Amino acid sequence: MVVGKEFSASLATSTARGLHWTLAISMLRTLQLHQLTPGSGSLASAGSACDRGLQWAQTLALLRGARGKGVQPSLMLYGTTVSVPSSASQNTRF
Image (cartoon, rainbow, N blue to C red):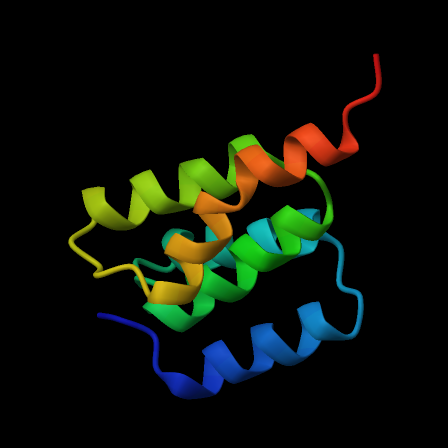
């Protein structure tokens, strides 16, 4: 069962208000424990939170996980994932 728009909206609102990426991932894991599949909007919101938290590996894992579960990733998640190399190079200091 794929979780609907209500959960996606809740996760998006929470992440927009500064929810830590760890909580976003925790919410997705809770869904999995209840045998629910997050929708593409939920994954995109969690990916955005991970991106803001500089957790690029988590962002990539969300994209891979979506494909593995048969969920079509949203353009937002693809966009966040594509921006990872750019964000990484801007935030890396040598």
